[in-house]
Length: 167
Image (cartoon, rainbow, N blue to C red; front, top):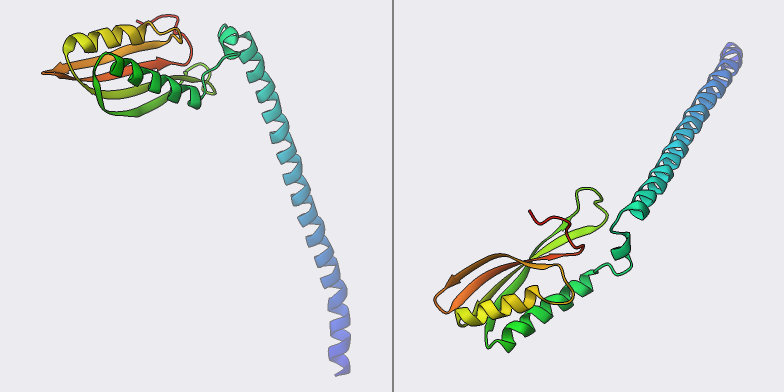
């Protein structure tokens, strides 16, 4: 028994030193991880400042004060449907086909695609599309119009920013 106690006393200091060294290594790893995370946060903050500077220098800055939001898009869709109804057309269905981001600045929405199915005369559809493209909200263009007998399937492209070049 006495020999066992003495051998344990000899091993405990070794275990104590090993535990202390393991604790120091663990603390160093945690500290290193925290330093790396802090550097990442700093880099992200610099990137945000850089992007904000690009946004402020962007010529679309003038339009940024009245950017369209999703609610505005819904109002524009309702206005398009109202115009078609004023032209004695029945809007059979409509849905948001997609919202797309700009290539230069993906934080801004670039345009949305709205697909409508209307029923009525071709002349009414043409007048309705002409009125829609002339709306003061701007940025609404007919991307595709397929006219069949007394109906049409229309794809409207609604720009959140007025495009510089439509080609």
